Amino acid sequence: MHLTDPDINALGDSNARIRVYIGNRPNTLIEHVQPGVFPLMAQDIYNIGQVCGNGWRKVFNVYAKLIFALPPTLGFRDTTSR
Image (cartoon, rainbow, N blue to C red; front, top):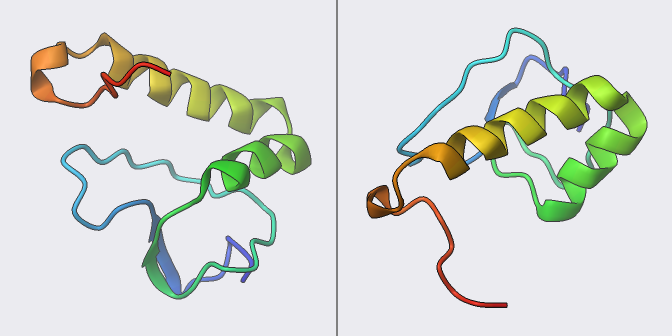
């Protein structure tokens, strides 16, 4: 489904504790996306960056930095070692 399709209400987790509104959507196709609220997979974020350019890479990067800047006690960081 094309991410600019009006049947897509949002990308992400419908139960998310933090939600960010961005006025535009990436102009690309992602096969597994369905109408409504639909989560992106890790490779989707990479593909959006590759297809749609540096602007969308920056959006995901800034969002990741915002979440990382929150106190660890809020529980948004993965504390498992890799």
